[in-house]
Image 1 (cartoon, rainbow, N blue to C red):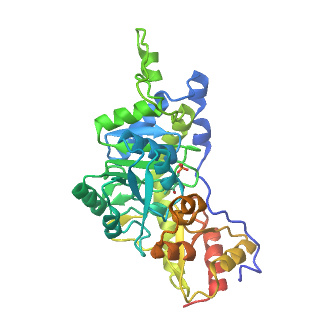
Image 2: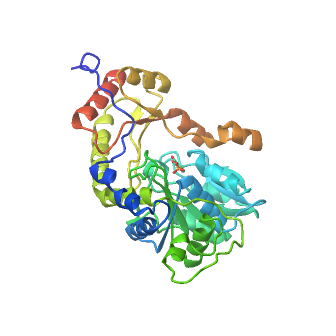
Image 3: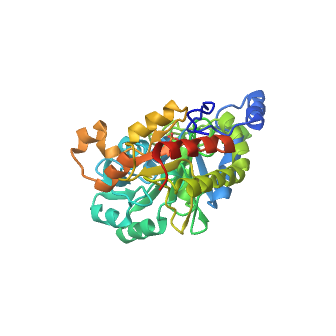
Length: 386
Ligand SMILES: Cc1ncc(COP(=O)(O)O)c(C=O)c1O
């Protein structure tokens, strides 16, 4: 039956996978009175670090603040440059600007939508301090290639893995493959703490520094002072920030993390069904996954080709009329006014083409077979078969 004549459904772009257990999780923290960063944050940090195979986790208020903290911890500042793919949520580039450093936008690979390592190499200068590759939409970038370039040029790598918790690269979990990796726990991600982020690293000194800078540069944490049987007068030796996650958020995160593998399994199953059935529709391409990666499908991104019967906005409007939410793919940060006014015109043709032709369709763990059928049928009716 055509979806237009069928009972209209209302399908959001995503739904956070939150249930009774998450609703009950903050109870203990609230009753104990320890609602800011405390024992639950420490437990969540250890749990995430151990899940991704890293030595340390440093929780933050978001991935954006985590990226800023990661850059500040390695001393990125005024006069430095950080190379960032433009095809990303603007937060990645903004985090560089918070440090006073300049953003140098680079190109992506047309198939993976992730950084094109050969383009990074061209943009390295004597001012380059770090490279920030992105694991866009939940697909790991070619981090070995990025690390290799960074090593040759003596620069650092901060991997923006906002959408990629649970992703594997060559069988190694994202979070242990770069000097620092930063995750997001925003509700659009596979697991959430409302807002929240985390840096993971194997570097002891760096982890210490990030923990200090996260809490105003304070020489001892609140938790240490609380647990101490002697009086400790803290010191503030440099300018820090308040990027502390709360125990309320971390207690939700601990439940979400326990559910992560199952949530990923379901998302991958749903994505496989989309891959199989949408490949039959003319004018759209399903996500490309290179052999080294295992996608988290934080979002499911379609590319509209030249054969597509409808333009992207037209298709998005027609799907919305049928009750199906969509979003444009990923933005090209270098085209936003905050960047054009600072850096003028930068030409990144692969990025610009990708941002014009990509579109996200609904995918979430609680999506029913019926909902997914409705989306697939709607696309088939709008666009026709091959
Ligand atoms: C690639 C990327 N980096 C950074 C962020 C910012 O994450 P947060 O909202 O946790 O600050 C996002 C959020 O969508 C993202 O997709």
